Length: 326
Image (cartoon, rainbow, N blue to C red; front, side):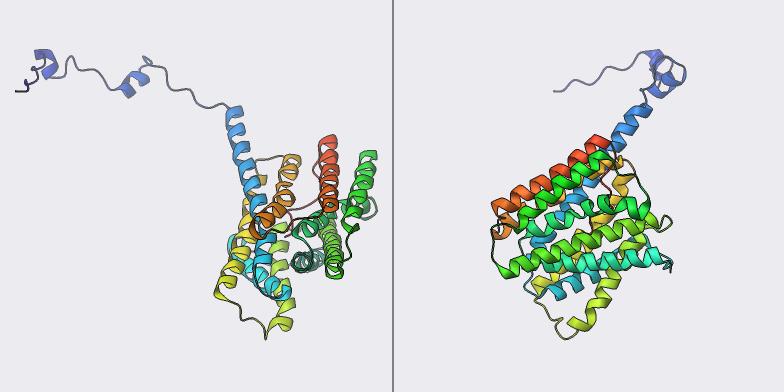
C-alpha cells in the first residue's frame, strides 16, 4: 500500500514557512535576474537572420532555370504567365500606390520588363548556365558605364575586374556551332545589358523605389506579351502549376525575402551571398533534366563570378547591382 504523505509542519500549514515565489525573490534582489542579450548579441542574431533570408532568396531565384525548362510551352507564354503571377503577388506584398512618371523610373520599368522576357527566351534557347552567367555579367556593364552615366570615379580594381570578367564572358562563345544555342547566348547578353540599364536608371533616379519598379516591371512584361500569346494561353495543368510557383515564389517571394534580409545584412555581404543564384541554377538543371554546361562555359562562369567577388571583397563595397532580375 502506498504510504500517505506526511502532513506539513504546523507553521507551513498557514504559509509561515512556505518558500516565496521565485519572482518575489528576484524583486527583493535575492536572486539576480537572467542576463539580457547585449546590443552586439542582438545585432549578431539579426545579421544571422538576414543572411538566411538573403540566401533563401538566392536559392529561390536559382530554381528559375529548371522551372522555365520544365514547362512545355513557348518562351513568350512562359514569360507572360510568370510575370503576370509575380505582378499580382508583388502588388499584394508592396502595395505601390502610384506610378511615378519620371523618365528614370520609366526606363527602369521598361528595362526590367525586358530583362524578364529575355531571360526566359535565353533559358529556353541555350543552356541554363549560359543564360544565368551571361545575364549576371550585367554587373560588368554597370562598372563600365557608371563613370559616364553617374559621374562615379573609375578605380583600378574596377578595370581589372572588368578585363577579367570580359575574358570569362568570351569563353561562352567558344567551341559550339549550335545556331539556336548561339542565338540564346546573344539574347542572354542582351538581358545583361538591360539589367545594367535597370541598375543605372534606379541609381540615377534616387527617389524611385525598387519595389515599385519590380512590381510595375512584371506588369509591363505581361502586358507587352499579351498580344503575342492571346491565342496560345492554354497550357497543361502541371505547367500552369509550375508557372504559378515561378511567379508567386521564385520571383515575388524571393524578392520579398531579399528586401527583408537587406535590413540586417551589409550590402557587400548580401552581394556575395547572392552569388548562390548563378552557382545553384545550373546545378538544379543538371539534377532535374540532365543538362550540363560545356567546359568552356563552366570556366567562363567561374571567371566572371570570381572577378565580381574579388572586386567586392577588395573594395568592401557591393557589386553595383540591384536584386537579381530573374
